[in-house]
Image 1 (cartoon, rainbow, N blue to C red):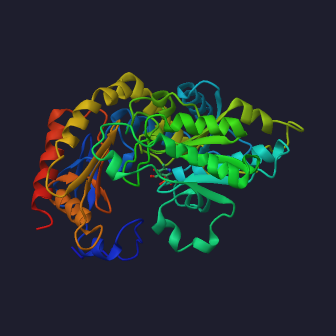
Image 2: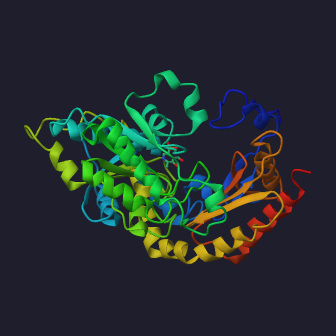
Image 3: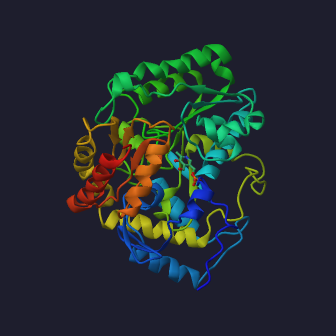
Length: 437
Ligand SMILES: Cc1ncc(COP(=O)(O)O)c(C=O)c1O
């Protein structure tokens, strides 16, 4: 067999040269396992990329997509509809907090974020407050990779190359992470709620009447699991209300079971005005994202002649039939198998497994919320190298996890049992023990 040419594919968020010199290739997946091209079974400790909490190739979703593919491949997204898109929007709004009446479909989390920011700006403009054009994100926030998302986002390498082209009128809250005060917190740290008051400082600086929206991840994921301090999200909500600012929760990771319910607002008892989601929406099966909005926001757009387009925004693949079929089947599976409840029930087992690393040489922090967890390692000489080494060695030993620099990240399946956790964390323990030497 001739060696395949791996060069043309420019892989995303990957060290292309190292990968192609030593590829990690999977050709199939089933349940909790990937199958590699050399026939090995690799246990997935990340459920895809936070996406696939119900397991890979779930037969119900496979069947639904297969059936849809043979019936309606595509339907024009503008001025034409197909029933599954309406049904899925209704199902998703039914799971959202009270008052959420509408759902705008996108193809990814990044698109959901940029759509949400545009909806927030347009909402204020239609309401006669076009001057409300400032957006507030947060340091270390990840909101995808489109220009809006990287502008409100706070991950330096994602912004560095584009710094002169980022959106204007954006400011950032400080992140909430502090190892001295919070290291080895289980769940929400007690320290840090006062950092939400930094929004008051930005309100004083820019004047609240000029701020359109604040966007945060309820639990920051990609930056290495930063859990909101007790009371922090409540305080953000309060300040937004005082100044007519929309609060956007970016729930691309946290929605659909990852933190033991349909949405983070349920868990934290804080209701935003706009929610973005993706990933779990189809269990990662077909790319899809969504923006959920409250009725008061939607209603403001519904003006003028009924045939006039209310929002000049949309994607060719908004509400794609295959994505909708996958989404509807995923919603069925979540419900029928009680997966949000299983996810919640497994939190303690996950937490105990993670925190058993406390005290291990080179482990500087462990943090967790729901089924999102991180083990932060002390860096070796070159920051990020140790995390990468542990990740690649775990894969070689049959377990897929993820590293963000020197922080190992975990995103288990909702129905993982004791054996599942034992296999993941025994491997990680063995590998960390042997790393950095
Ligand atoms: C909170 C958050 N927002 C947005 C995104 C971007 O989603 P996508 O990669 O589907 O564009 C991600 C992806 O991880 C995310 O975690």
